Amino acid sequence: MKNFWKELPKPFTVLAPMEDVTDKVFRQIIEEVAPPDVFFTEFVNCEGLMSEGKKALVHRLDRYPSKKPTVAQIWGIKPENFNKVATMVEDMGFDGVDINMGCPQRNVIKTGACSALIKNPNLAKEIIQATKEGVKNIPVSVKTRIGFNQITTEEWIGFLLGQDIAALTVHFRTVKEQSKVPAHWEEAIKTAEMRNKINQDSILIGNGDLIDYSDIENTLSCRGMEGGMIGRGIFSNLKAFSTISPTPLTEKERIDLCIKHIQLFSSAWGKTKKYDILKKYYKIYITDFEGSKELRVKLMGTKSSDEAVNILLGSDN
Image (cartoon, rainbow, N blue to C red; front, side):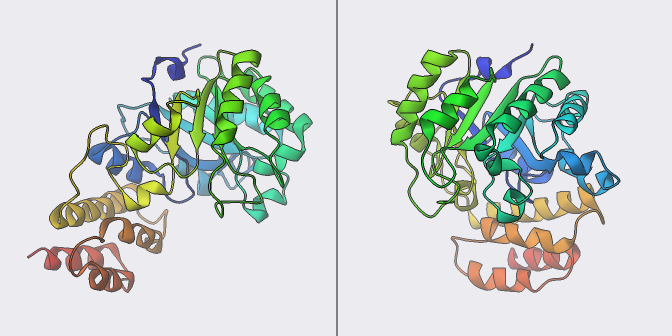
């Protein structure tokens, strides 16, 4: 098996999978500005991909020629579908497949998927096994949390480490906590100690409150984990993965990046995605310069990509 996780520098960096955020366009922008060592796709539902609804979902697995490993993250409840989607993902050229066992959204939990699997280890085991059997030459990993209503690191994380997975990303909060409390990084030491006893080949990635590369270095240095994952932190710092002390983006750089994102979005998706999805990105680019708030207000009132680009071009004169 070609296991890219073993070839990464330490500590390595990962951009977290985020719904309607980490599509191929946003990943392409981040790769241009300051790339992580590993990209994740948005998470994609296995049942949907194996149904008539595939056409509305498969775009989440669209790729571009990235120089960095890209992992497809999938979720669902039927092992047989995980098996088939894992095969499909490998055929599409992804470098790895990751199983979402950490999403805390209520509508997802109600289906028995994602973080609900913390309370259903038997099904979790079947899903992992089916996914591993669906691939030939790429690694299978899992992303999860340290418990459902309470911290159960020894039981749940220990269980996952016993499933012979290539890598494990741990968000150091419970499902109940979502992101409302500081991450329990003290559990990372415990996680690393268990890994060393149960399966030394599994790579560990920590997630929760990490904001940039230096933060990853400092947080992981004494906790025994190989990589750090940044999610929401990318919204306030597009250069979060820079390994050097980065200079802040200028107003012109931010506007140019926003225009490029809009144009790439229009070119990539056409009518596949609604224009309004773009609006969640405007706060990422149009910030930290004089007049940025007023410019964002104008952009939020737009109804098309062309209208937004014209406003941005006018602001740059």
